[in-house]
Each structure stands twice: as C-alpha cells, then as structure tokens.
Image (tube, rainbow over all chains, first blue to last red):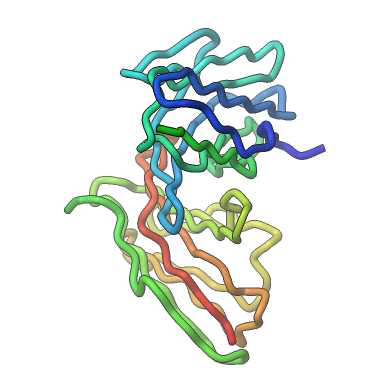
Length: 112
Length: 112
C-alpha cells in the first residue's frame, strides 16, 4: 500500500463546475496535510494546508480533512481553464520529522 | 524576488561526470529540503537541514549523493559519477520550523 494515494486521473470538468480531488494516507499519526498545484514543467506551488479535522476555505478552494477516515480532499469551485494542472497531495507523517510524503498527483483539465 | 532560488535551472551532463546544484532558501527560513521528481511521480524526499545540521537523509540518497549547508544559508547538492537513472528534476524547498514548505523552480538534470 502506498503511503499517500490520490485518485487516478486524468480528471476533466467543464468550466464553472466543481472539481473534487481526493487523497488517502496510511499513517494514522499524520498531522499536517498540504495541496500543491504543479503546472507542466514547473515546480509545485502550495495552495492549501490543513491541520485540523473539518473544512478550510480559501477563495475558490476548500480543503477537507477527516483523520478518522484518513482522508483529505480539495474542492475547487467555479473551475477555470487556468486551474488545469496536476494537484499533489502531501502529508507530514508523525514519525517522519519534517519531510513531506507526496502522492503521484491528479491531473485536472478544465474545459472551456 | 524573495522566493527560493535554484541554479542552474537546467544541466545536461555525460554519464560518469559530477554535478553540483545550488539552492538559496527564503532568507528567514531555517529549514531547507531537497526532493527529486521524475515524470508522472510526486516529489520524493532526499534530505533536509535545520540551519547547518543535516537532520535526515532518505534511503534514496546513495553514497554518490552529498548535500551541504555550511553556513545555514544556501545549500549544495552534489551527485558524483552520474548515472542515467539520476535524470530528474531536483527540487529545493524551505520552511520555518514545522511550517509550510515552499519550493524553488527546480534544476532539471539530464544524464546522457
């Protein structure tokens, strides 16, 4: 079992729709969860982080965390073509010190 | 620009040569991380520093890889006797303590 798993893409949504990206993790003691956006050929860009159970909203982005289910998600409302990118879920595990463990990413395409 | 910077941005080398990459973190960040990313995968942790101390190294970091952060500011990553399997994007990130990590633009290494 991979430590961090993301739903396999690619994911395609029409402009204006809600895009839902999902991530599960295996270390129950994980404390911190991050979503990065990565455009093709570029480096990852931090867009959301969440440390507590529940929802966290920032503009069009909402991160949701359920530690009991070991599940974290990212919702993108009113999706725009500029949101087309690979979204990486990253977890800081309790026993890992400071390093992040990443999923393989989900490629999102928003169609005009 | 006060973000993380990396040099060079691209490096092409022949198998067996040594290469060195440099990372300058965000100035107030005391933690610096190196990751490696290959096509279609999420970044994989290599090593990290708190100030000048190298606190953790991944099993991925073979004896051919060495990293330094001599004065607790910039860091270098050296790969000796490069192999074709070393071809990847090498990413540097920085953070303050256990906070969010911000990535630089990366150095893309191609080993011929």
